[in-house]
Structure formats: structure tokens, C-alpha cells
Image 1 (cartoon, rainbow, N blue to C red):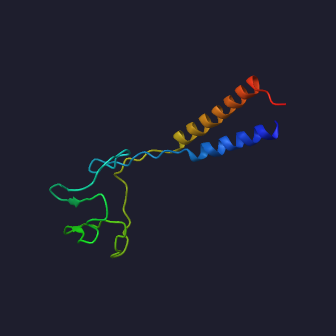
Image 2: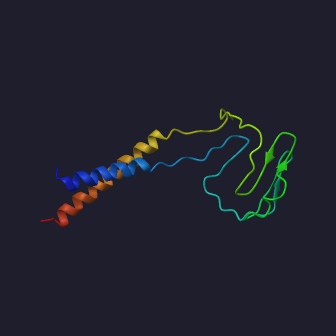
Image 3: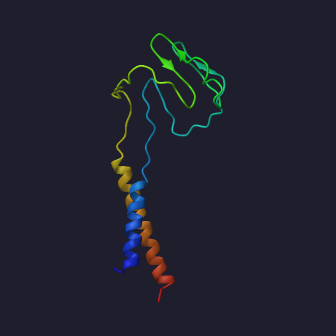
Amino acid sequence: MNKKLLTLLLFGLILGLFVVQVGAQSSANYNVGWHVIAGGGGSVASANYRVDGTIGQGIAATDAASSASYRVSSGYWVPMSGVPTAVGLDSAETTSLIPFWLLTSAASILLTLAFLFYRRQNHPTQ
């Protein structure tokens, strides 16, 4: 193989390694959607929780939303309080990244090879 082809193949392989999509985490009680467009503002509440939101830094200076068990602060610079606590994700639905990673890597390599083959057939270099 010539040096240019090897360089392009290596570039395609490296590009394929970085194309990994992580699915959104969800469980029976909580859901974090993958694609969300939200304007913010207003309150969202349930029987146990309430979260106030805004588009900017508007409520960052006010007290945090809290209950007996939980506290939610908003804004860009959330004050540190207490000690970080480990959270178990036993009930979360997780997926393996390996099959998608292999698929995207193989697709990237095949597309690179197809482009190089097309280029060589239709536009040979001197």
C-alpha cells in the first residue's frame, strides 16, 4: 500500500473510534431523554418533588429547592455542601457500547475504502 492510502485508512479508523453514541439512561421511576429542547422557566412539581427553572442565572441567587431528603441548586456556580455520595445504578437501564462502537468503526473504515477505490478508479493520480 502506498503511504497516502495507509494514512487515510488510519485516519478513518481513528475517526471511527471517536464516533460512539451513548444511549439515554432511564428506569421505571426516572427518565433522562436523549434529545430535549426546553425553554426553561416556571415550576415542575409532583407529589414528592418540585424544581424551579429559568433560562439564565435568574434563580441562582435564591435558595435551593429542597425537601426533607433532597436539595437541588440551580445556576452555573452551585455551592458545594456536604460530602459527595455514591449512587448505585442497579435499576437503571444500561446498554453495551461495544456493538455500536464496532458498527461505527467498521462503517467508517468501509466508507473510507469505498471513497479511496472510487477516487482511484475515476481520478487516478500521477
